[in-house]
Length: 200
Image (cartoon, rainbow, N blue to C red):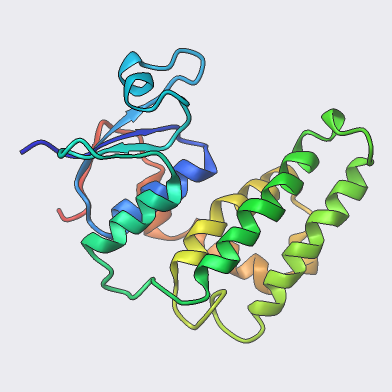
């Protein structure tokens, strides 16, 4: 049986969240790790924009956005009830507000209008909002994982990798991040390999 084909890049936060959702939903698929400096012709043919992740389904459907891939995965299986009515708004805030701040902080020399510390402080406003959410629940929206946790996690991980100092001031967010870093879902999604099937 032909499997869905996922074009991915191991460290890309968008690709990480897509892979985590596919593994969660036990969607058997084949992975192709993309060399971003030498993108395969097959990828550019089905998705000329050439970004990852891209999921090519056996029926010819092409999903070019990580959130579309995540939502597709949940249509296949959502055994732990990841869907949540408030998730979309939080994910949108992460992708449109926090992600640009993350880029400015990581690559601060490209954005000299502020110092690195000023970029850091701007990002910490969003992070503090997440800390406040975690005062009410074990996870961002409720007491169990939702799609919002998985969608935001790779970006908080990336901030922490670039910074490494904000978490002591945000203990609940620190514990939340550590939970996901140690999860089997994350470690499975980060494994190298040409195929993936978590049902075995």
